[in-house]
Image 1 (tube, rainbow, N blue to C red):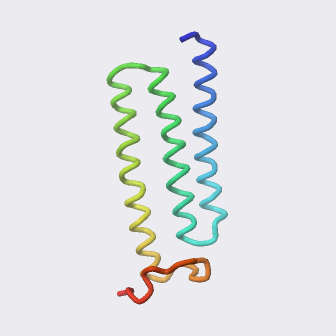
Image 2: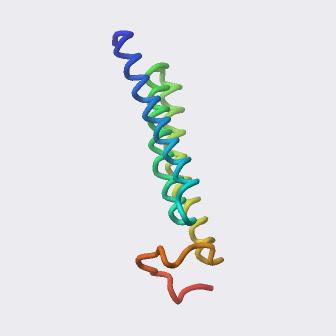
Length: 112
């Protein structure tokens, strides 16, 4: 792969990763309640991390680097949704959310 193509790919991956992480940060500040903020905190952050680790794996291509990048993405993709679920469940249980923003409340009547 030529240096120009590699530099262009690096710029695209790092800028898209940074844009996704920036969108996650802005969503955390701007969204009105815990459940909306959880969406902003998990999805764009994972995609941004995937773009940046893909860039690292492409620029430093070795078995160790690619394995480490894959492990980082897999563990982050496994833990972020679980943490978001637990935070959302705790917010729902302690009533730290805005019920007027819920379209369907499937847990209504099942609060402890």
